[in-house]
Amino acid sequence: MTTSAEARRIPLDVIFLIDRSGSMSGAKWNGTKAALTTFFNDPASAGIGVGMVYFPTQNGDMCVATNYAALDVPIGLLPDNAFALTNAIPYDALGWGTPMWSGLKGVLMAATAYQDAHPTHKVVVVLATDGNPSSECPPTAIDAVAEVADSALDYNGVRTYVIGVAGSTIANLDKIAAAGGTTAAYDITKDINQFAAKMEEIRTEALGCDFEIPPPPNGQQLDPNRVNFTYTPKGVGSPKILPRADDLADCNNLPGWYYDSNTSPTKIILCPASCSPVQADTNAKVSVLFGCNSVAN
Image (cartoon, rainbow, N blue to C red; front, top):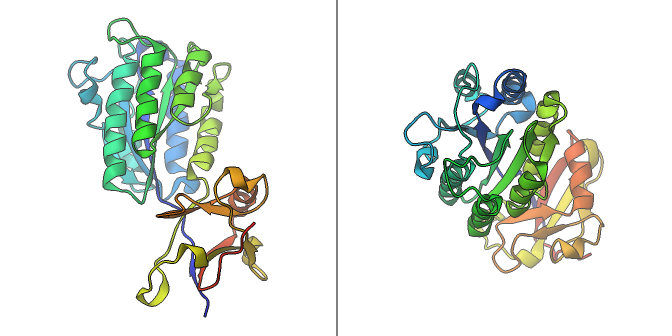
């Protein structure tokens, strides 16, 4: 007997680490404020947990990483947290120095701790800056900053996205993004008005196509080999069973899905060829079926 349950995306939490050094003042800061405000109030952001940290901090020594682990705005769900987030945005960027290692180290301490406390969520960090690590707060080598992002990714999967504002060295920020599992920085050095659009891209990518595995019916034990995933385009008509792959590499650019772990699965991840159309289909219906052998690719 086959039973089905609605497939729900893994809850997403985002912590923004925003550069408020003096070089961000003026048009760059106005663009940053506008982009953040748009993101927080966008209906497409509803249900996302969002927190905020600014660097350099005004709460103690700017070079001490733990001063950034206490978020300026704690994580809370949008749209309810939108007022607190927008209300906390400084009128202008009047900070001194760019303690990038300290800021990222501290915010990733908070992010990885939140991920540990919420294992069914997906926690990411978004760093936005117009500069390079300042000499006042060692380590200043970009490789050391990248290592912080790499460590968080290795520890429990927290990814670091990076947005490069005019004045930043994109090649350096690319290193941080790559180490943090997001390939490359988002380059808005030529147009601060691209900030909002890049944040939309990050939201789409971060939301991804990771789905919770619903509890099997009637208190049954999960049998990973007797699970299927269906997609109904536009929510109309007969559902299509997507084939199961062994892992991302086994997707082979074809439709399908795979587990995060074949031995102890906690979530279902769509192959890229299936993820894109599901993300683009606002009326899509996706379900998990229990009781029949998985259809292999």
